Length: 442
Image (tube, rainbow, N blue to C red):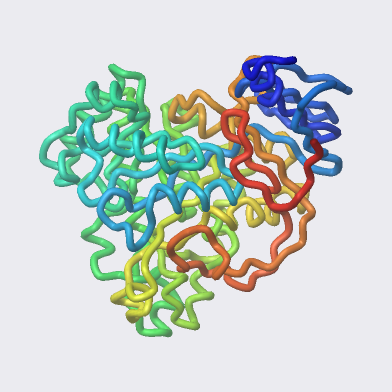
């Protein structure tokens, strides 16, 4: 009779068969079987056959990918459980195919101490579904008067620093943050806007803001901030990542800085790629986000920036709000939309189904690139790697119903939108944490 220990070891085996294995880290795109044991990838072959108690997933006609990483999201925990919790937010992330997420620090209170980083990590260990790599605040209380203790925050598990939600307009503080972060090989994440230019604005400043009589946020707000922050990178030789880039001017500035050899990276969000300021004609507050939906020209520049590598990373900027908050007027409602569960199919729609990016290059924007930006120890599924795996059906045809989301909030502009592509299995540390449909044999 087998011991209970032997039985347990065998049951930790997971075999993924017949899937299209795509690993940008090794530039691999071929049909392979993947064997997982004790939370790690232990074998990759054309065919793996095992006896005994092994969990088997038939991934025929599915893509088997490194676990998707969302480099930019908001979980509202601590402080605003009516909007989202670590439990609900990570469930929503898993449903969207994300195995790792990087929440921003602008909670209530903000994540500006080691104790709060530890709170997030311990809460996630107890209630979470996916890995959390916490981004801590640059300044204490997000007040931009004094730097947070970077070394203590890193020791507690923080993987980057940002005052996202508002720009760092104290340039002396930002300069010191860039210099200090270099000591720990860490990145500053920029929310690029000039608040003196955008104050009171609710949508993009342009034809539609004027026609609809809504205060606007000009493109110059983002571009001016990007320009001055690039100048600080040039001076300090630090690392700076631009969050949610939205304007053609910003793309041009970032491209030029990269060509100069400056350590500048950038991300894009799905809503800026499929919606424009023209879509605000219905006055829906679920189309109000910061930065706002921009012009068609801006959208085209963002897509070009992704294709030429200027924008290296896909993100969601998942930002939950309550129904009551979003029921206010367009001017009074808060900025932000949820996005974990719709990001993958929207990016597929723009870049993969059109053939603009190869599958390997497409997956890279979700895995290797964000891992590289923040030194996250994920993004690959080679032998020996932690078994964070996303299995997707790129051709799944479905309609998004916001009432079925795992998030606590419902503020999405994509309700009833027909989508193509979906996460079918999300596997974290070798454990299936989300399964869309029964595709499993014992």
